[in-house]
Image 1 (tube, rainbow over the protein chains, first blue to last red):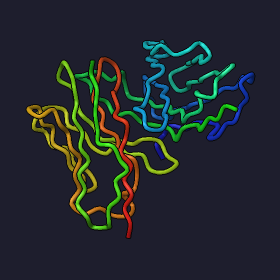
Image 2 (spheres, chains in turn red, orange):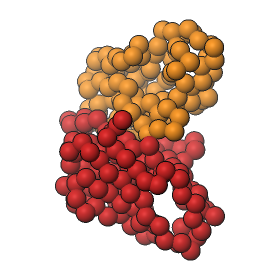
Image 3 (cartoon, rainbow over the protein chains, first blue to last red):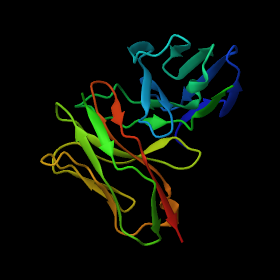
Length: 117
Length: 110
């Protein structure tokens, strides 16, 4: 039990659909993250939130839209995706923002396996 | 920019064999270094970490030493078990996040 849950675990959607991924952390952490995990590529950081405020957007296409209503919940809204967006989407949290001098542990959810058809 | 390079897999070993997974890094500052592990169907979880040069992180029989002179943080285990089969990720701290490597898949056969 990592304390970070993600729903759904699997999602198949067409390119014209709109769907949302949900992440919830039960650890009392202040920072939350979205990552994209594709085969044979490093984890790609997508978004970072700290105290509900977005602190980083790593040049993610606008078809991905994050929402952080509070420090415990994080959403990723998806619309008009492309087949190359098929991947495992991981949510993570940490006590506070990770910095060079603040090496907090990141706690990951199990991920949502997304397939875009 | 900051980055991590780890050996490509997959790695297949027999039970009780010695494991080494190489990891080298590029960083402008003084990062902390990590190994995360991902078991099938799960998210990543911290295996061990080291926060300064010459520190040794260890957990569950795994070890890694922060070598600033060779910019390396190689993962080792003296005797692997079938239950160690997973994907292993090397990572370092950046400005406000971790930079991860591509992952190395380890399969241990009985």
